[in-house]
Image (cartoon, rainbow, N blue to C red; front, side):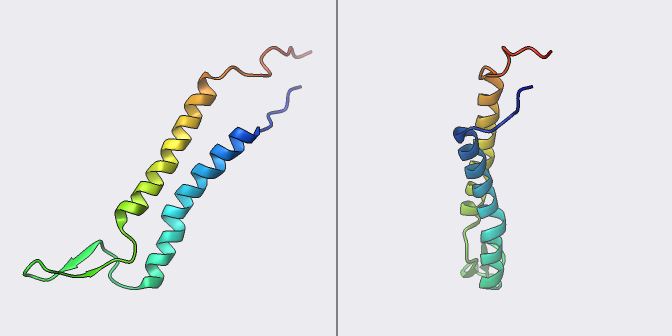
Length: 92
């Protein structure tokens, strides 16, 4: 029987994409909470002047999560199109 072991490339892709998603959601979320209010991108007064901004730009957090998801999608497409190394083995 063939065992499904991950190679170095597989591990790098999975760990990198997972790390980007966790960095964008969990780590920067904790940083945002520790930074204190406001938890929005910008807080303005009635005149439209920016009076407070969040600690981490939401575009950075969104970009990290999108980059992680895009890497996972590319890895999935690679695994879908790459030939299976164990396909030539026969099960007895």
